[in-house]
Image (cartoon, rainbow, N blue to C red; front, top):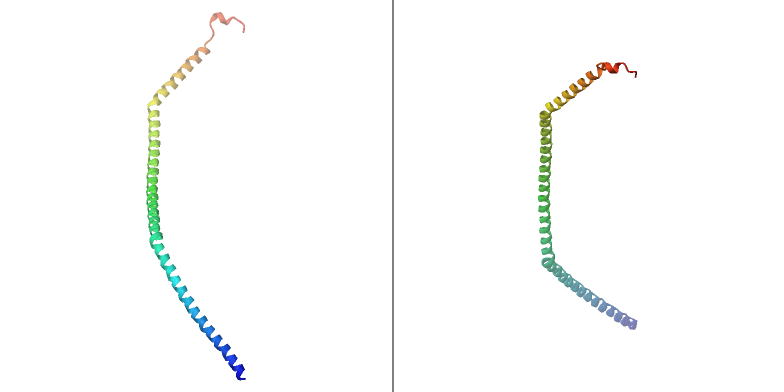
Length: 141
């Protein structure tokens, strides 16, 4: 049995050494992965500081400008709309004043023309109602 135990112990020693080597490799891989993680994190932080942050500042400045311009445009649009409404009200008021003044100034002319027409029609009707002259009375119709 001593031969078997020696062989068994040798296999156990090889397995223990392999386990220790595996453990050392796992620790080394973990340390290497952590170091790579730190480098990548530093690289991303540097890229963000050099490129992303200035780009975000520019984008935010552009958005602020767009917001300011849109607010000014909205104010100007409201101002123009108000001016157009006031102008339309003034045009309507002016048209109504012109219409009423024109009626007031021309109503006597219209009345005079209507009176003249009635008078002419009355004269024409009175002439047609008179009896025909004596020479024409003897004729047959």
